[in-house]
Structure formats: C-alpha cells, structure tokens
Image (cartoon, rainbow, N blue to C red; front, side):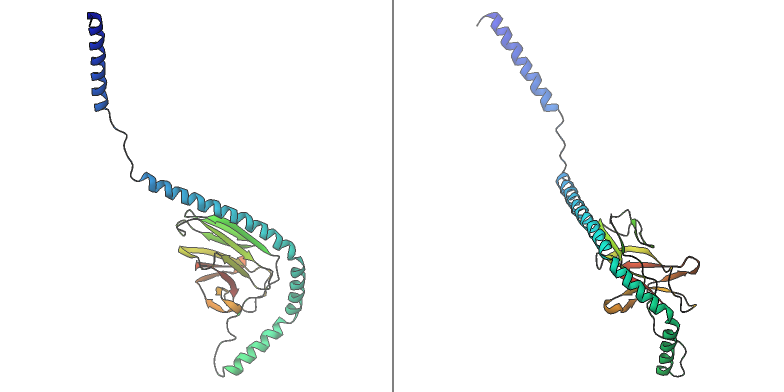
Amino acid sequence: MSRKARMRWLVLAAGLIVLGCSDAGAPTEPTNSHAPTFSMASDSAHARHEALRQQLEERKAYFKAMKEANKDDLKAAKADWKAWKEDWKQQYKVEREAWKRAHPGEKGGPDTQILRCEPQDYSADAAIIGPNGGTLHAGPHELVIPKGALAQEELIVAEAPTSSAVDVKFAPEGLQFLTPAQLTLSYKGCVRPTAADFFVAYLGQGNQILELPPSTDQKLDDKVDADIGHFSRYAIVW
C-alpha cells in the first residue's frame, strides 16, 4: 500500500472512531409510558363530543317539527283554559268542601295540586354541557348547571309542552348532578288560588308528586326557584 493510501485510510478510521464516540454520548429520545393512554382518552372524548353534536342537530330538527305541529294543540288548550278560568273559584270551593267532609275537625285543605296557567306555545332548548357548566332556556323557564355538576359532557334537553300546567321535562332521564342545578319556573299568566307559597315538584307518571325539592317563591317576579339533584320532569304546585 502506498503512503498516500495509508494516510487516507488512517483519516477515515479516525473519523469513524470520533463519530462512534459522539453517538455513544448522545442523549436518547425520552419515552412516555402515559402517551398511549392519554391519546386513547383524548380520542374517546372527541368521539363522544362528535356523537353528542350529531344528536344535538337531530334534537333541533325535532324541536322545529314539534313547534309547527303544535299550533292546533295550542288553540285547543287555550279554549279549555278559558272555560276553566271562568269557574275555577267554584271548582276550588267544591274541592275544599269535599276535603273538609273527608277530614272533619282538621285544619288544612285539599292535597297539593299542580298550578293551572294560561297555556303557552311549545318551547324547548338543548345544549352540550360539560364540567364547566351551562344554561338552558325553555320559554320563560331556566336551568343553570353550575361548574363541577357534571363529570363529562352530556346533551341536556329541556322541553316545555303546551299545557295548562307549568311543566318542564328534562333529559337524559335519571341524570344525577354532583352538585345541585338551579331550576327557575315562571308562573306568569297563572291563577293564584291561595296566598300560600308555590313549590317546585318532581312529577312521576300520572302527575304523581314524587318529591318537593327546596323551593323559593319569588312572588314579585312570578317565579319559583329550586335546587334539583337529578332529572326529569318538574312542575309548580301549591
């Protein structure tokens, strides 16, 4: 081998040695054992949000169809209300007399009853609400879900049907709050048969009163406030 060739070989070998030492001391890429789990959780939350968003669009279309189909029901309900309003005092008198006959010598009056009001047009609202909380409005009625009341996003739905009762149904059915939500029901246009306070009631099938959550009758504003811990259907009673 010539001297020039030996020199080129030595320079090449030295370069390879330096490169090997440099790679040996280089820091390695850190590994993150939590990355796959985080990615899976993020993907799941995104998929849930997209599914809820699709359901929200479907609900909005349903609300629109219900409002259009409700016009005849509203006319009929207002006609019934007009007839009832004309003789409600007589009806209440009959109910009180019947109660007194059934409870001789006792103080009080008829059992708790659902408040009767002038029927309003169908109204509804829906929103995707998560741990940061949010607010819904169904006509004059309001539901405020505070921060921390929900552990994950939910599609919250409120529907106030055409009815002579202050009646609002919420979904999803059976949803439990981690901290109470604040429900406000308006009773403008209602008949007040008594000076006693009104209450919010949780209703079951056949308008059975299942629960009376703590309520405050805001008489000056014609509304009742209540803290509720779960869904689904609420009305004003007296």
